[in-house]
Length: 429
Image (cartoon, rainbow, N blue to C red):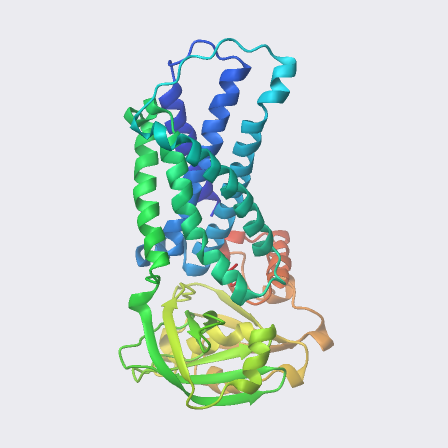
C-alpha cells in the first residue's frame, strides 16, 4: 500500500514540477500560495480518481495488489489523504486575508481565460460544499458505531460528489495546464474516474460476479457462530481462502464473509458468521432454510500454495479459511505444504471447529494441528508459534487486528521479516 501511495505522490509532484518549471520568475509567497492551492487540489483529485477505480473492484487489480481486502485498505487510506489534501486546498484558498497582513501583494497578472470561464463561479461553490461533505463523510466512516446500512448509502453518494469535484477541477484548472503534463494526467484521471463513478451509480459494481441462490442449511454453534450453507448455480467456483459478499436483506446490503468450505463443483458454498454486530446478531435467529441470498464473488488472494515452512494461525472465526484449505487438500494431501496450524480460542467451549479441524488435519500429515486455549496458556505469541520454525518461515494469519499487530512485533523481535507475515484486512470501511 505504501508503495502505491508513494508512487501517486511522486507522479503528482513530477507532473506539477514539469508543468510549472521555468514558467514564473517571481517565486514569492503569493506564487507559492497559488501553486500549493493547485498542487493540493491536483493531488486530492488524483487520489479521488484512484479511489473510484478501486471502488469498482476491477479483477485485473486483485492479484497485483494482493486481493480485494488490500484494495479496500488502499481505498480507505487514499480517501483519508484525498480529503486531508482537499481540506488543505480549501484552507490555503482562505489564507489570502491573513497573508495580506504580513506580505504586500503586487498587481495580479490577468488570468488566461477559456470557454469554461462561464462556469467558474458555480465550480467554486461546488468545490466549497464538496469539502464540507467529504469532511463529514470521513468522520462517519471512521466512526465505526455509525450504522452500516445508512453508511453504505451515504458512501455510494460519494460517486456523485466525485463527478461534481471533477467539474470543479476541470473548470478551475489553469488554462496553460492543458498542454502540459499536469493537464494530461488531469484529463486521463477525469475520464477514467467519471467512467467508474457511473458504473458505481448504475449498480454495475460486481454485477458479473453475482449469483442468486438460497440457504440450504443453517447450523447454530455455541459462542454466537452460525454455519450457513448456500446453494448457488453450478457456475460458481472459488479457491480456499477467498471470501464473498452476502446479501440476505437488500436494505442492509452486502456483507463480506470468508468461505469455509472447499469447492466441490456443485455450487454449494458454506460460510461461518460470528455475531459481532447488530446485523450478524440478528442473523443468528432470523436466518432460515430456503431464504433467498445473493452472493457476489469470490474475492481475495489468501493463497498458501507455496513451498517452505509455514505457520497458520486462525483466531476464533478466523480459522475458516484454514478449514477451507484443509478440506480442499483431502483428496491430495501430498500437495499440502509443511505447516503448523494454531486454532486460537478462549476455551474449549468456544472451540466450535476443533472436532472438524482434527478430522481434516488427520488426513493431511503435512499439517500439524494445535488447539490453543488462551484461558490456560495465555495469548499465543510469536515465540510460541515459531518455536520449531526457522526465521524463514511464513506466517498466515486470520483474526483480530490487535492480535495480528502483537504477532508482527513478536516476529520482528525473533528476527523474522514482517514480509513473511500474511493477513487479511477484513475491515471494509
